[in-house]
Length: 90
Image (cartoon, rainbow, N blue to C red; front, side, top):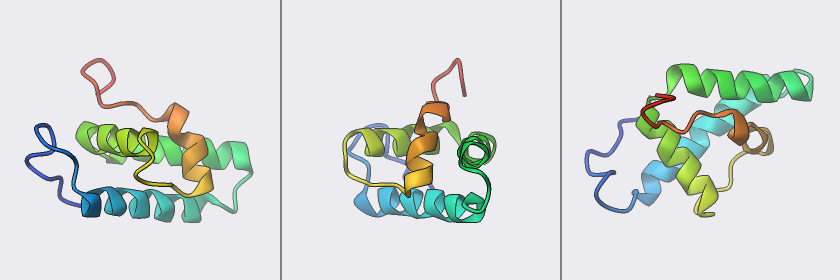
């Protein structure tokens, strides 16, 4: 996994870090793209929820929301199933 910037909670997320998150999500999506779409989308979200830290998930979702990254189409469809990294869904 990519190293998270230590200052991410107090300053704007670094563009390179955002690009790395988008790239990693794209790699996961590429792996699952041969699956039926519904299964691929669920599997992408499941992988990200299991293996990414809460901060990585929150930063990825924030970057998708603000339009600073444009994830792989399948990863984009998985966004609604990715936990946001808050305390309840950590």
